[in-house]
Length: 223
Image (cartoon, rainbow, N blue to C red; front, side, top):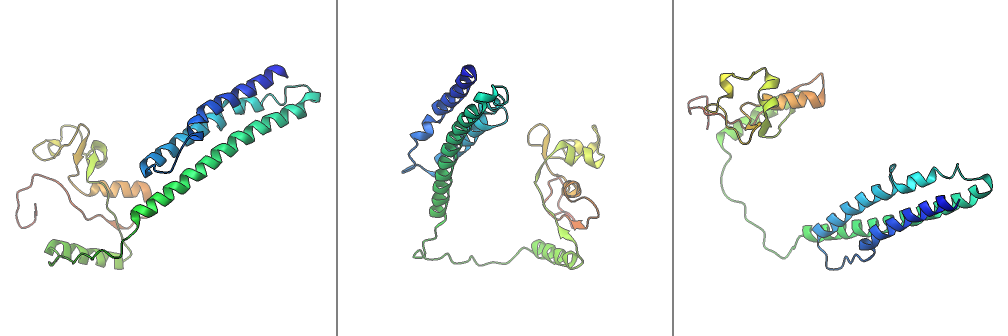
């Protein structure tokens, strides 16, 4: 059992060495970003030392391989190491989560002594008013309102709409490209495709929203 025990001890030692930074972690004075980074790193450490591919997981496999006389003692040893590792991770995880929660609460705290902001005078744009009326009509008939990203991939903006390579609609004179493979959506059909993929059928939606094309302003095109 000596060799197996040494392997377990080595796994415990490796964890202790990796965990040293968390033993020394001082949360007082640390900001939200630092605590979130530490929590993410702790999660990675947890997977590394307690996950299915960890040395600790491999150590458990030795329990059934040692002699029956030593199996109980060795099993208890492995369990004690696992318990120590798990407890230390969970305690630190709880401290970090509490610190993050407190920090977020402080950031979002409203100072009721600060004078409120007066609403700016004005009215909705006629197009906005018309859009809201149209949406209300469709919602009353059981339709859902869908919206999605305004920068789309080549697939959703063209290929999924049966607009092949070489189609005039793909020309830069008609489409605003951002980076390679991405463009400002030229129609809200991109939203419909994503909604169908996500919702499945049957589906009842409308997808009002901004589109970006090099159209000349007229009675039916609003830049």
